[in-house]
Image (tube, rainbow, N blue to C red; front, top):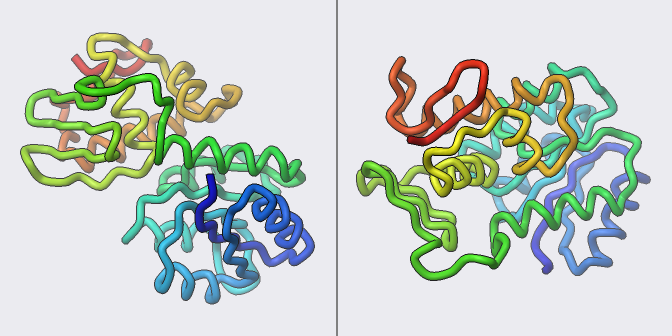
Length: 230
């Protein structure tokens, strides 16, 4: 698969171990140990994915995540030693796509990297032709090019945001619970704060589609059940 990965972790032994596993899978790894070095890399290089430790000696992984999202939509995986739900919600609200809690198996992290990159680049490969494009009331989604347009204007979505919107639009008329969305999009077990995580992503999508009123045009909430695009 390959690709350019930004790796930010102040624990050199952990960073070296992750780098070795990534390189073994033909990834090019750009390793940083500080917030400032990582910020310089973000501003000078174009990456396919970023792996960022939340706790850095001279800054905050959350802030770095927010800085990346100002200009880029590539997937971001956050590393953390904390398990509190507020950390997850904060990260997702700033545009992160995934969390990995320390300690972890490097092979698990590499698997998540591959899964996110597949989502961006080639998806599941099961659909083709017109099935790759969905149009609803001025909204156009192109799964192949990862393009979202609203009334002809491009809307920049993160890979996670695009995946949620694509799933709902492709299955128009079907209600998905927060539990179902989390399991399908993240491919992970449902934890107690998953509902908040999904709500944050839905809110971001609505904001980007200028669809935040009481009667949203696209993603509607079926209270007590889930979300639907009618």
